Image (cartoon, rainbow, N blue to C red; front, side, top):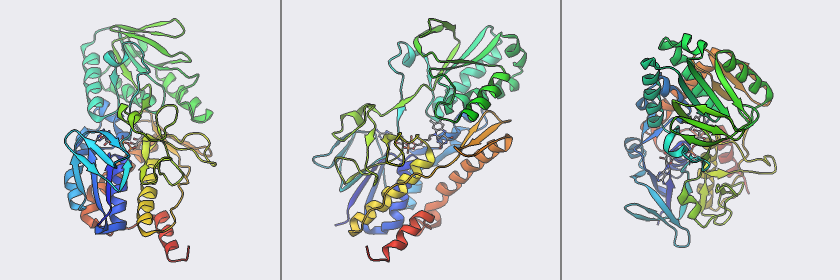
Amino acid sequence: MNPRVVIVGAGFAGLETALSLKSLMKSAADITVIDRNDHQSFLPSIHEVISGKVRPDQIEVPLPSLLKAAKIAFLQDEVHAVETTIREVQTTREALQFDYLVLACGAVVRFFRVPGARELAYAFRTPEQADRIGKAVRTLLTSHRHPARILIAGGGLEGVEIAGELLDLVSETGQREALDSGALSIELIEAAKRLLPGCSERVQNFVEDYLGNRGVRLSRGSAITEVRKDGLSLASGETREMSILIWTGGIQPAPWIREISLAKDADGWLQVTDRLQSLDDEHIYAVGDIISFTSAEHPHPLPREAHFALDQARVAALNIYYDTKGYRKIGYHPPTKPQAISLGKAMGVLASDKLFYSGPWVVRLKKLVEKRHMLIYRARPYVSAVSAPLPGAEFRHLLKLLMPI
Ligand SMILES: Cc1cc2nc3c(=O)[nH]c(=O)nc-3n(C[C@H](O)[C@H](O)[C@H](O)COP(=O)(O)OP(=O)(O)OC[C@H]3O[C@@H](n4cnc5c(N)ncnc54)[C@H](O)[C@@H]3O)c2cc1C
């Protein structure tokens, strides 16, 4: 009997795991992908949905047709539990038995139990939420109701990219004067002392100067403690008026993940070995945002980024394949890759520990990455579901198969 592989989530990590595994195992595994949505969304571009530069459907990969072409079963449903002892995934309609499970279900917005935040702030995690934010901001800007106060909670990547898009919207709707006079304000509120915690000081300086010089107010070093209908309070005792609050304050695992009897860190993220298997069950893999990955080379948890999710997916797929063959599994060694940050259409930053570039071309580069992703994933199963060329790292590992282990 073929091994049954169930993959929960078809975001960056889940879809890549499914397609890579299909490439490796062809018809020797029964693969089922479960996702609540019938499409994958390219999350790194959803800030552009706010300004209307992209529509949600332009950054969606349709799952039913794509997985059908790849001969992978797809179930559009919500997973709410995993019973590890009986190897069963439970959805709202079905219970699926598995021999291998891959948890790739991403993260949900975290409101840090701040009173009023969940009810009154606009969450920002999906294209649909970004679309709602864009409509609310446009209505505010074109109503010419002043004072107008747009607050962004969280000065990480999402927060600064939203600020850049809002600056573009302000120019587009003729509200630059209102911003300069203070009748309209855009404010980024970050609990840490600097924007973009985790980035180099050079990136932080550049982004703070760029946004600050263009009229974005920066509030750093004080967390939001309460949100009310027309304002909020900070830990420092200060208050802010507010017309719209956009929440990018943080993420956490979904509540049902906390109920699964698998090892987790203090924040509830799944802990995995360097083979990307759960510490408690070697037939359960976890990849993407849902894991807390540390290793001797990376003592601090890896940032939750799309390129890591894709690399992890390929390693997990290879390891499942190797396991079925009785080969030795490979370790995951995250490569350092530069991060691209867009600050509206006129400026972007491309940086890593060692390099720093800035300019409008970075925004175009980011767009190219999006287009490439759309093209590859929309076309991949049609080109060849079962003989897709394996990227360099996998190819090298496959070559090792030819050698005695
Ligand atoms: C606004 C924003 C901007 C970003 N910008 C960048 C960037 O510029 N560069 C970068 O590298 N990374 C960026 N990221 C991070 C990147 O998008 C994530 O690291 C990546 O999406 C993680 O992939 P994943 O597969 O783990 O999770 P996701 O892509 O979130 O996919 C999870 C999937 O699981 C499904 N799912 C979840 N729960 C269930 C359930 N209970 N039942 C069924 N299905 C379920 C969801 O529908 C979804 O399809 C950004 C993220 C956001 C939100």
